[in-house]
Length: 152
Image 1 (cartoon, helix red, strand yellow):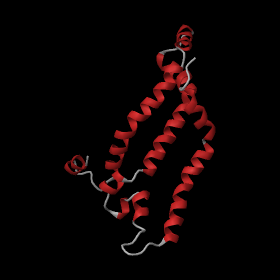
Image 2 (tube, one colour; image 1 turned 90 degrees about the vertical axis):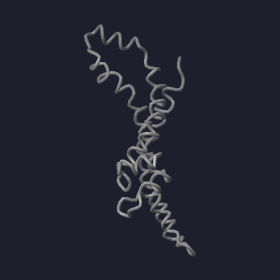
Image 3 (cartoon, helix red, strand yellow; image 1 turned 90 degrees about the horizontal axis):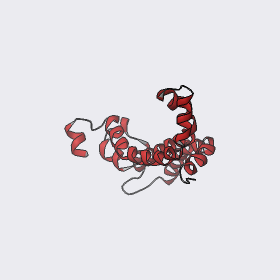
Image 4 (tube, helix red, strand yellow; image 1 turned 180 degrees about the vertical axis):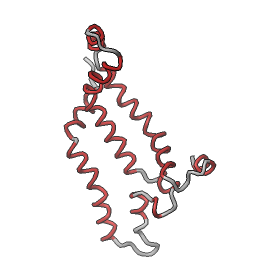
């Protein structure tokens, strides 16, 4: 991937991270959502077709509202995966103005000394957005992660 980013001149840009995160997270998110979409009964879609809904109406009025907990849980999973990722951000980004949080935390260590106070304060502050997102979206997370797991 480094050679690809180098040849397309995407090193030291956010586009390199967007491409890398999308490449690795998209298949996982698709597989997570597939289990939920398979659990939605086809009879509901047939009933909506009989009532006169088009396929787009079925998706907008039925599928998306039913799958909202699963979509939120998958989005949170992808966000946490990108938030905690170190290797791509450390490899593709060398400029300080584009550096993400995880490689930035590693720069707080010195060669012969480590400022543990600053490192721990920055680590705690880096956890706050994730903790707030989980606290706010917890009901969707529990519903979404268990929704497609049992079929019956």
